[in-house]
Amino acid sequence: MEAKELTSLARFLESAERNRQEVPRITLQHPSLTVDEAYDIQAEIVKLKVENGSRVIGPKMGLTSAAKMKQMGVEEPIFGYVFDYMVVPNGGTIRFDELIHPKAEAEIAFVLDKDLEGPDVTIEQVLEATRYVLPALEIIDSRYENFKFTLPDVIADNTSASRVVFGDRLIKPSELELDLIGATMLFNGESKAFGASAAVLGHPARSIAMLAAMLSRKGGGLRAGEVILSGAITEAVMFAQGDYVVGKFDVLGDVSFLCK
Ligand code: OOG
Ligand code: MG
Image 1: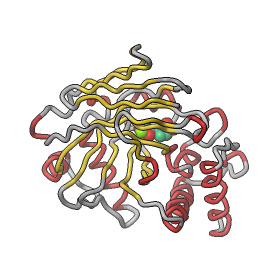
Image 2: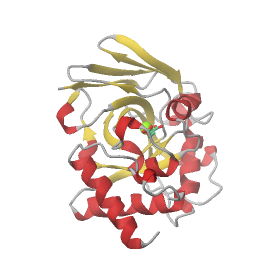
Image 3: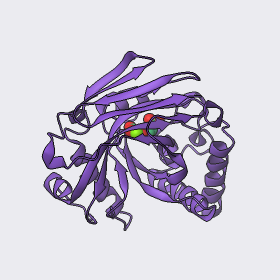
Image 4: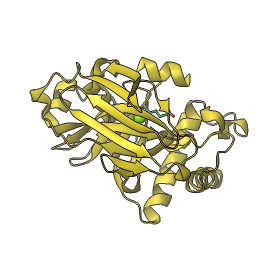
């Protein structure tokens, strides 16, 4: 695909997000779109947003648990980027009229003390480089009609990234068993999804190691101070105006928002 066409698809998806306009998935028009081209479109979207004054707070992994792969029908982990304008304070509000068909999912976020890069980063290296972990609710909002997509579609759409709420408790990985953290999402007090952190590739730190490898293939890496999402533990659950959503995490505490 020509660079001009990749740029025009990036503009198309970026404006779909800004105008909360759901659009047909791009592989309907471009059935031979490759994964590499999809990452090129994503990179163009990142560039556009940065040019417009937004700042990347860190990369995110997606489709790292069986629950998510099954729910979305895509069986390969993917990465995207989270921006400053997406962050909602813990206990804060999310405006439904800014979004299309949002869903919430429970995740563990990592903040590193030092950069990590290369194809062979290990779980031990990730844990050693981690300043702290914190709980998060990621709000995903695919720009595609009916939240349906193929692998290249969702990569091009910056992996449905939309909003994120982080918890307040920052904990060193040595102070907990990071692969044994239970997480439950409550919607208006009712449990709608639950799981344990081992659902993320056996250990959330493995997702971070895999992300380092995926970024290194594109000449990049993980940077100290970035806030990095390791991927949903549970399936994602749709919410609506008026819903109060709480993610309860063992040891790491609660994360919540109200959808107004
Ligand atoms: C893609 C984003 C997946 C996760 O944590 O698995 C993701 C989607 O499901 O729309 O962020
Ligand atoms: Mg996610």
